[in-house]
Amino acid sequence: MTTSTVEYQGNLRTQALHLQSNNQIITDAPTDNHGKGEAFSPTDLLATSLASCMLTIIGIKAESMEIDVIGTKAEVTKTMAADPRRVSEVKVNIQFAKDFDERTRKVLEAAALTCPVAKSIHPDIKQDVSFSYSTSS
Image (cartoon, rainbow, N blue to C red; front, side, top):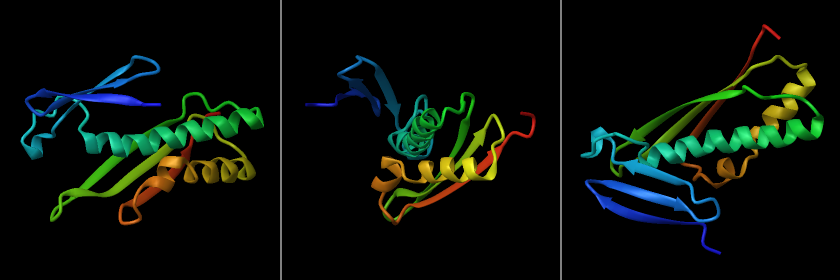
């Protein structure tokens, strides 16, 4: 079954349609590559997908452990390389809204690192993942 369709809109913009939900995503080329940078670039989506996947897998694990991870956020930094132009590194800092004991931390962190996107990204792309916990639980 087809997952999505993507249509070129002109001016270095695409519109992607998720067929199951009818949700749409617009992409623009980044300003450093002839674009307007008015939306996520395709490479921004790659980097952001990693963080989104990690948070989703953390959520699945947290539900099975009956713990609350609502409010957990991720900051994403993408680094580009030249020759060829490509993503060379993705940094993800996962910031939990609560603190957890050491065992729970290890379980949640391990879950994040095994997300399908992390396992699908080419090994030449460095994944720098860090975790922080709120001290005001």
